[in-house]
Image (tube, rainbow, N blue to C red; front, side, top):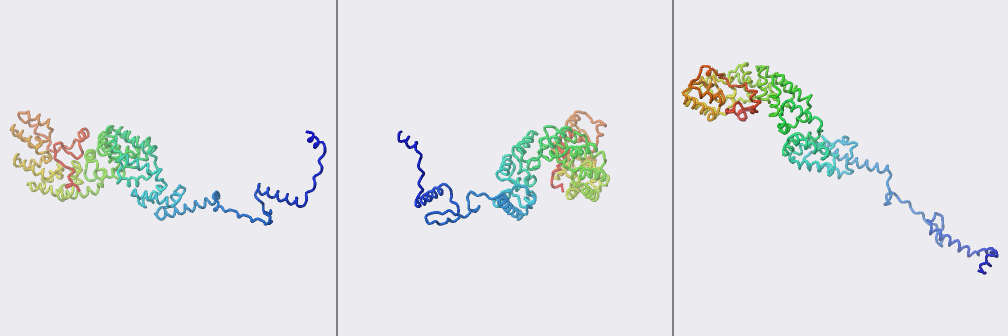
Length: 507
């Protein structure tokens, strides 16, 4: 403590100036410490040799791992890659301008993989050129989920290309938001699950409809005019296009026009239930011109309703040319006048589709049975179905008439509908019952009545004169019965052998 006090009590003597050698040593020590704490600057001496250090080269952006390109460089690179992709698409026939503003794969290789995937779906370059937006769909995020969903529904592999061509927008769709609600709606309309894929195959545009739009209003209108609720699923299954039809522009004008020619709404509803595709016949370009053509060729206005109810397809075919051809055939081969030709169409509108060979074949058979051509003409006008019946059945019926019934040919001229009744189901049993009773009656009295009416007649002891005065013509005024009983349009009678589907008789 004493020594410490002594040092602090006396002032320190001034430091001695360092010697030249010491000053040099201090400079070297300060230089070394400065170089250790901070990077050396240019111009500073390094090492005992006093050599000036070389400035290190500035690293380029490409040589540095952590260097980032400028925004301008990035944009130039992106534009170059997009130009390559556009050139690749142009080589496929796709207009790159259609995809301007759409995000596409960054490289040609990725785009090529996308194109190859679409090719694997049987879509051609022409299909891609027609809808280039399909190239904007990601295979993994868009296409695979949609295709997987359609496959699980039951859409057939061979039907998929046509579905995609008609509605390629489905590749952009969301399964949960867009597709599943439509499928649920169809099932709610009583479309059976195994029919749903067939509906989508036939009308894939349905996948883009909104549930609260046209679909709901079209079905509501059909039910309102009398289409049975239980038949809605069948109507949609056979003609799903109805879901895309606007009520005010298509369905309602069609229904009102048919009402104008004499059809009741309930009859129209039954037609739609059985053949819903008639709604697709254009009103202005098909339906109205065909109605006018029927009137021009001798059909009476009051018969139009029956013709349409019996053969709705007549509204949608190229009718005027067919009528001209058939009228010429009937006039030349059967001596049917233009006025009587109208009666033929009224009684059997399917006659417009009979082939020339079939007509001549039946005419030759009747003349070979002994009928005059004038008698054949009268028979055909009264019962045009003669020209479409199965030839073998006609032969058997005629042989029974000639050999067992032993009646005059003139009776067949008066009641040619005899050939339309089943030999074993109607003609033979009724003839045997009448013969057993000892009655003498006309063919019309024998056949032109229901089974119940015939059984009632068999309770008579004699046949009154008023009973014998029955209509010899084949009853075609059965529109209301056909509507109520839902008999197929082509059938003439439940006991008839008339076969309108025989391809031999149809052109």
